[in-house]
Length: 140
Image 1 (cartoon, rainbow, N blue to C red):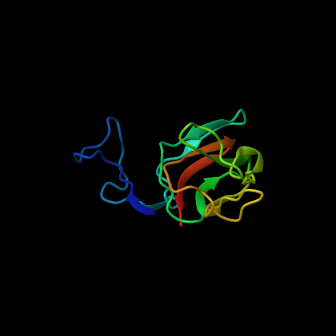
Image 2: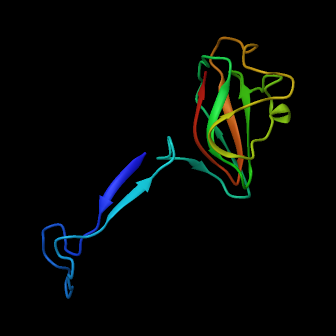
C-alpha cells in the first residue's frame, strides 16, 4: 500500500504557526509512505513471547499461510479442537518454527504436508510468537 503526502510550512487554515517563518509558504515536499500488504495492524511480541488464540473457525482449504515478521524470533501455530485440545499432528511440538519476514509463509507440521486430515468442524488456531509480528493468516 502506498500513501502519497505533502508537507507545508503553514497550518491547515492557511496561517503560519506562531512565530513561524515560511520560506516555502505555498509549496513543500511530496513524500511516499509504503506499508506491507495487510500491514495496518499486527499482533507483536517481545523476547518473552506470547500467544494469540482465534475464535472457532471453519478452515476452508488445505494449506495455512501467515503474513509475519519473525526473522528475529519465531512463530509457530497449533490447531485445537472445540475443547481446546491440540489435534495431532497439528500440535505445538510438531509445528515447524517460522524464522522469516514475508507476506506469504506456509505453515507446516512434522508428519503432515497439509490440512486435509482435519475434521470439517469449527477449530481454533493458537499462534505462539517470540519476538515476532503476525499481520494476517488465511487458508487456501
